[in-house]
Length: 305
Image (tube, rainbow, N blue to C red):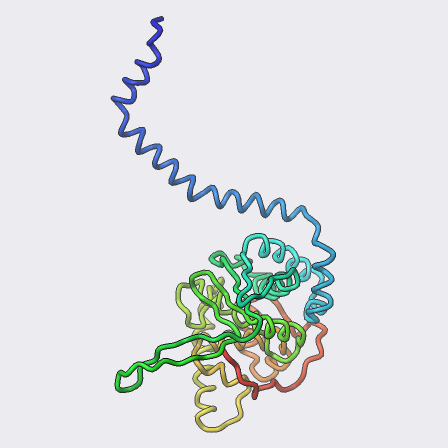
């Protein structure tokens, strides 16, 4: 066999099939770019599933989040699994000089994970970052008036949820929301309800509804309750929910989620149809959890959201 057989052979192959091989190589690289992160994420999750939940993290949950102590054992276990995944996959960034601690990571991840504990997709696929401020943060806005003149305005916010894969939280309000588990006010639950809502591509109070029953019942019941709330406020009738819920259907769902998890007995009593909808959606029944639940929500505190 001549010494130059293999070089000549491969040269002729490249001349004959070079363009096709190049296209094949590009296709393989593109497929690798798409599927390797998914494969890596799945492998990482398998490894996390085999790791014990850190004792220090469990202590944070027990000491800083009373609602965790009321959860059924199987829900606690699912939340712990999701906390490990959440912390491994989402970047936590401190803002305005804030140093991120394990307590921050665990409390935020835990409350966010409660919402998805029983959902078919039990995480937040598009979420990349949690930005944490020490306290309420300023947002500069440009708002046109009726004459079209644009006015600069500064608003203070406790939290925001962005469709670009970010959630912004005030740590002071996050800590306060976790510490009091029966007042119907929880910043993390509120903002991550928005994240669920945003998974459909629109922010309209309609998260992905997994069953035909929910798809049929959710739109008319939610819209009717939202419209009635707006009428009640216009007529001066005391509302059954924080008036902030009347801002738009997206805020209605987010505030309703706070009530569902923190004041479920109250919600089931005054709005049984809405409670049943939320129960079907989240596949959880918080009113069966051993929480001391007040009869009336606190509706007078100003929200910066």
